[in-house]
Image (cartoon, rainbow, N blue to C red; front, side):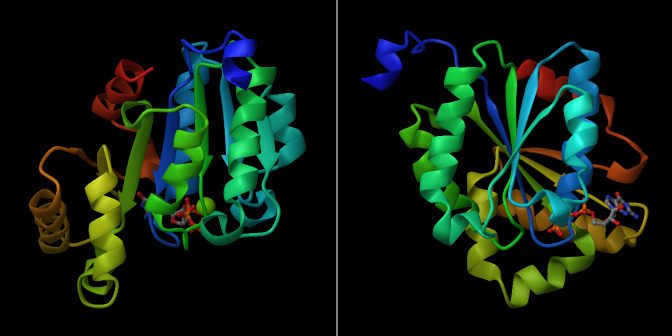
Amino acid sequence: MYKEDQGLSEKRPPIILFTGFLGSGKTTLLLKTIEILSKENKKCAIIINEIGDVGIDNREMKMLGYDVLDLFGGCVCCTMKVTLEVTINHLLHEYEDLDYILFEPSGMAQPSSMYPAILHCGYEDAEILNVFIFDPGRAYLYKERMNKLFLDAIDLAKSVVVNKIDQAPRVEINEAVKMVNEINPNMKLFKMNIDQGLSSEFHQFLLERG
Ligand SMILES: Nc1nc2c(ncn2[C@@H]2O[C@H](COP(=O)(O)OP(=O)(O)OP(=O)(O)O)[C@@H](O)[C@H]2O)c(=O)[nH]1
Ligand SMILES: [Mg+2]
């Protein structure tokens, strides 16, 4: 009712959700993504768990014209659902001309736990661009110790970025690709060294979803 009152029912900025386990490269990808999007004159808002954690300088980001909303208190999955919902609603009502919302949940958060809050803001699954960042050097860990978490995360992902290909031996990269393809053949897969920049295919993928 609130949304209709505000006349905001039609266009919502897609949410790009950067999921992936600790240290996989989420923040690096988020930062490169806003760089690309802002060059295309897209207006982005970023939601992250704790600014200090990810090394984003709030003042610097604000000077560049980005909105950084800090969800204090750590893990979104267990304690921050209400806050996430409030934050997204706030963005939708305060900034009507947003092109994208970028969100990096904590590396400990189960991606599926983010969905209820986002869907509650009126989003549909198709508007949530869930990008899972996968460090192939950790494939053994996902396979043996975190299988359930991994299956859920890949199953929900619209895209998987197999990252750090500069570090991983080819056999590990191939194994990582095989693992994700077996779980979710519908997602779009990219192999990248995010530190060096984003591939033009990924760039295109982002803009197509805008
Ligand atoms: N060699 C290499 N290092 C990378 C690549 N992408 C990211 N890194 C490095 O990996 C480290 C972790 O990257 P982050 O982007 O902070 O990872 P994160 O997933 O946000 O980490 P948490 O938020 O702590 O879970 C940083 O030192 C990055 O510079 C890559 O493609 N190759
Ligand atoms: Mg991070």
